[in-house]
Image 1 (cartoon, one colour):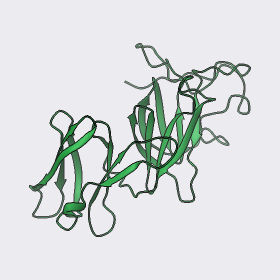
Image 2 (cartoon, rainbow, N blue to C red; image 1 turned 90 degrees about the vertical axis):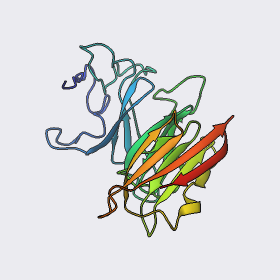
Image 3 (cartoon, rainbow, N blue to C red; image 1 turned 180 degrees about the vertical axis):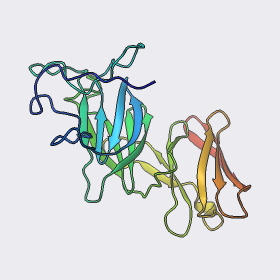
Image 4 (cartoon, rainbow, N blue to C red; image 1 turned 60 degrees about the vertical axis):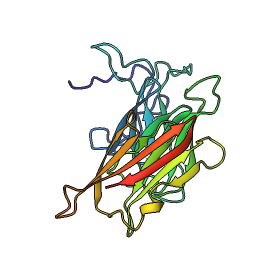
Length: 238
């Protein structure tokens, strides 16, 4: 079913601007490509270039619901109004994917990771409290989605001579998260041609497939076992 969008009901491009993925100079022409659509805190989140554009909260339910990227009023700021924030970095900051955690949503660029959340947890995620901050600087492969491993977030990097599988834990606005390269023990055995990923939260299992000619039937796996947020045991297998 084709999505329905709410039209702007008040203001103009200055007081109630178009979402940043639209070409504001000539809206009829193509704007920024949308790399990913996510759902976070009852909002749709469009990742386009370095921008995370969040729709109005509470407009997604019902068969006739319309996605709204405009404020209802230009005079009063509402906590449910759309949110449009951009990543800031010394490097190209194009956002490709994201995954929700307890205190926000972790967004992934090609060379950097960000946390989009509220500066004030008592107020919630709103236009005047939303903030995107850089939390880590690791290379990320956009064609393999990040995964949740319970209380941690995992992602891949296929650049260079080997395949790498990282984990981020204790993710907060202030300070860097605890980063671990889970594939370190098999870094010289993992092929750099792994091109697909699947996971089972119930089975504590992550699987990777191989695109290399003659090795298409080869699958690599990572199994882990956590107790009280602590990794008690983990193993790689083929």
